[in-house]
Amino acid sequence: MTLKRILGAVALLLTPAIAFAHPGHGDNGLIAGISHPMGGLDHLLAMVAVGLWAAQQKGAARWALPCTFVGTMLIGGLLGFEGLNLPALEGGIAASVLALGLAVALAVRPPLSVAVAATALFALFHGVAHGLELPEMSSPWAYAAGFVAATAALHAVGYALVRVLPQAAAPLVRLAGAASAATGVWLLAN
Image (tube, rainbow, N blue to C red; front, top):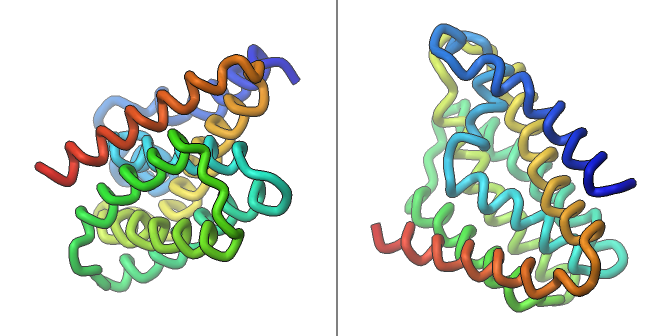
């Protein structure tokens, strides 16, 4: 599959969010769920970084990291729907942007158990934040389906970029990770 086709598929996946970007669709859980991960720089960077990092891995880590993130984020979202709030929630999300960006920048390949545990921890913070921000009058299940679909799409974008770009582009991927990590530092400081 060419980069052009992958980017075209991603554009089609994002079309519903673009089409409903104007006001008046706040009660649609699916659209709100899709919009949430795409609307916040912290969520966007962390989720693309998971895909980038997964593509830098070998073996089972390539699918385990995105699947762990999506599954744990959904659990966190359900906890957020019930009103659970984690201490230092925003700090945990900012730390995920920093850590995942560093992991990409350094192309770190830790043992699978360490990578999965870190990914799960970060996903829990993101999921709880999604769940706590359930719009009034939205269907929690439609909202959850939206943020799960958007997250998976963002992971796929990151993964596809690494896997489709020529090996010579690896420094650009690492630079993107460094920029994400720097953004994480900025988010922690603010």
